Structure formats: C-alpha cells, structure tokens
Image 1 (cartoon, rainbow, N blue to C red):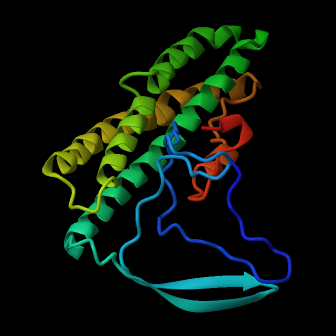
Image 2 (cartoon, helix red, strand yellow):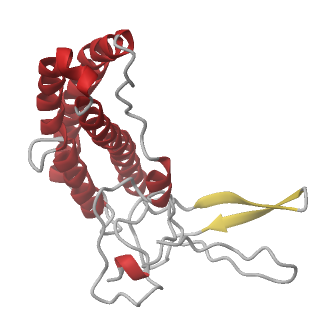
Image 3 (tube, helix red, strand yellow):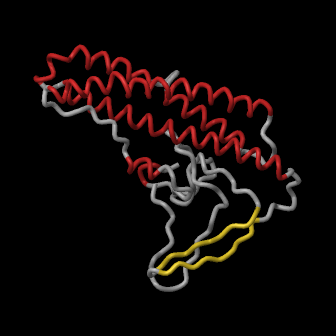
Length: 239
C-alpha cells in the first residue's frame, strides 16, 4: 500500500497527523466496512498518542525547522490520564512483541526458501538428512497454529481490543497481554536456539562443502510497508 507522503515541490502543502504511533508489524490486515477505495488506512493502525506537548520537525533544502504542538484530550472523554497511559503502555508492549515476531517469521520463511534451494544441489547429498531435519524443525514455527504466525495474529487481536475504546484496559485484557508475553518468550526462544545451534552447524558444513549458506535475512521492503501509519489501500490490496 502506498504511504501518504507530503509533496516535495515548492509551495504550501498539508500533512494531517492521525494522532497515532506507527502501526504494529502485523502479518494480516483488514479494512473496515466503511472503507473508501485508496483512501482508508488498513487495520491494525497504530496506538493513539497521549495528550501532551510534541514537536513538529520539517527538514527541507538542508534546513530543519521545528514548531511546538499541543495535543489535548477530547473534553467529552473523562478517562483519567493514568488509565490512558496504561492503555498506551500495554499497546506499546504488544507492538514491540509483534515487531520481533514479524522479523522472526520473515527470517524463518527466508531460511526455508534458502534451505530448499541448497537441498536441491547435488553436492548437498552428504548432509541432506541434516537439512531435512532442520526443515522439519523450522516449518512448525511458521505453521498456521501454535507458531510465530498464529502468535502475531493473537497479539494483533488483543492490541485492537485495547485500542478499541478510550478506557482503561480491562483486567482480562491485561491478563491476556501477560499470557501472550509468556507464549512470545517460548516461541522466540525456540527460534533463537535453533538459529544459534542447528542452523549455525549446518552452515558450517555447507561452507566446508563450498556450498551457499542458508540465508535468513528478513525482507526489509515488506517490513517497511507495515510500519507506515498512513498506508492506504492499493489496487492489489483493496477493501
């Protein structure tokens, strides 16, 4: 989805801040039923910013200018500031876990694709059993259930629940964040241990055979597309 960017030509331009942080790194996106073609940000969107003082910075032609900006609460909302801060803190915690989870999924998927390419080479015949064992341990990490992929979806759902109202998070929502944090540690430790031990050992064998190593570099382009809070629906991803 193309980001909403301010024009760089000379003259007056307007940029509207949606009062949100950057959106969390979600593996799945959706649009509200009221979506307008090419003019509706996809969900999940970023967490709402807290009322307070901010600084707007504009850099152009080698010069940087700043202006103060004050964000005030809708007077109709009576939620205490402490409750709104708790909402933001939990949302940021979820966003951070989603970012790490997203990156891990990208690495595992890239590693599986690289592993498939290496396995097809005739010179890899000697270590093919080891390659197959590695594949069998990596695939569950990106399966549909009980995996890094399903965890990302669960994190996103709780994130949207917490951001869905101007109220303090419920005790159930806070407990869900704690439970997901435990699951996050389990899933991430599985991948980190696999990357540090078995994957590392396989790459040493591949180097000895003068074969390409298994690459797990995450796709930066797709990640960047998921970190812009003004993403709009595009032809290939319309509501």
